[in-house]
Image 1 (cartoon, chains in turn blue, cyan):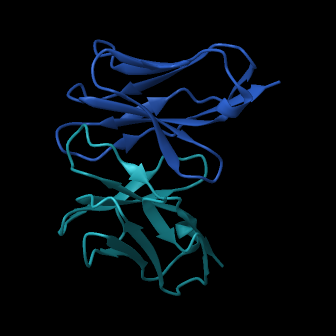
Image 2 (image 1 turned 90 degrees about the vertical axis):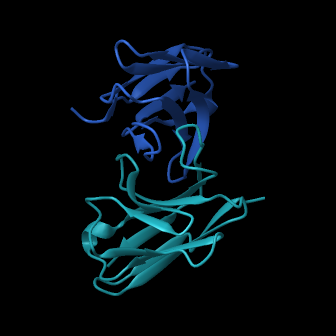
Length: 110
Length: 114
């Protein structure tokens, strides 16, 4: 099992839709979780950090389920500008560097 | 203002011709990372520095080397680039190496190998 796995995508959704992505991780000792957004041919940019059960920032909500070892990202009222690849990243343990998933591609269509 | 700067943004090299990619940061962060990212793949950590302490990932090829002459700068040297080394190379920094230390990425250098 890979350390971090994500929904394969692509997700094609209409404007205004609600969409959710899942990310599973293999190391039960993992403490910190992140969602990054990456636009085509650009660098990843931090969207949200998740340290406890969840985090919310406007239209974006991240939730952590430690029992099932996954985190999710929910985007409400999707905008065209939300079209991007969303990367999940996990700190496996302690001071080890981030491990990234392959990303889930989202296309919001008018 | 850019906080993590990478130069050049695009680099073309010939098969086997050494190339050096540059990263600098204005954040005074202790940790600097180099990632390789190929199309539709996850960023893959090559190595990182905590201050001057170098940490190489087990599966990073010997063809890849790194230098960090001071806090602000870090270089990625590819001694003999192969066609399979064509990728986006991302530099990132973080204040510390703790699990809550956010990583900030530079814009990347896209490497083409002819």
